[in-house]
Image (cartoon, rainbow, N blue to C red):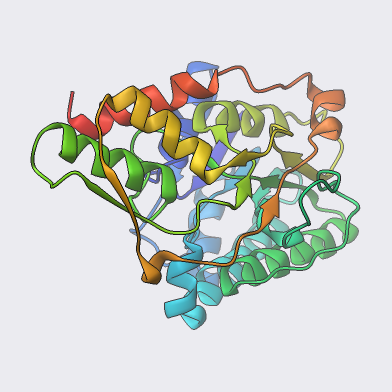
Length: 294
């Protein structure tokens, strides 16, 4: 297939482009050289690419940043999605369209409750999550008009190259600097009691590649491990990998209320055979190694 990918230079986008190319697909990637919410510009790039499939990854992906910049987040995540969907409708109406939204569209659950499924109600809490929920609903509306839209709802994922605004690379970088004696042995953290569903970024990319298969039924698909991991557990594993002793200091600026978010990916497994394959400790080991500059 010829696949047009937005956000092609991003943390996930560059991996998806490489994975698609390795499987023999022709990839046309765009990133910050275009304003993703510019309807005319996006339409022009899609028209020239004449794709068989579209993967829309371009986004403002930080929940913390969305609190500081809610309008820009909505412009990028919602209006950007609208621009891509309109371009597909006008210039690639037979293309498979993969929209990457977020597991945060469900909001948070109580500890011990069942993992979120695709037919659960959307209850987003942050400007980021609300923008993604709106984009998800917009994708469903275009699907009702005949566009082959697949909505991926990935839960937390990490790996080398992820921005330090996210919890796992932030911990890894601080620990690497402590191990290299470039920082005093004190780790600044937020709330360690929240529970998240973490995946390796390469497993998420594998799910996206499978969802681009034209044989996949359109609809919403969670991309999740189904395993809840306490943030404190993540930190303990990274400290063990780093082999350092350090003081843990709670930074009030990083503290958010404890919450719980785990996803059920049974629909994705049933349709594609996908399952996470990367051991969690291996993910954190690669993340820490990258943080050391090795």
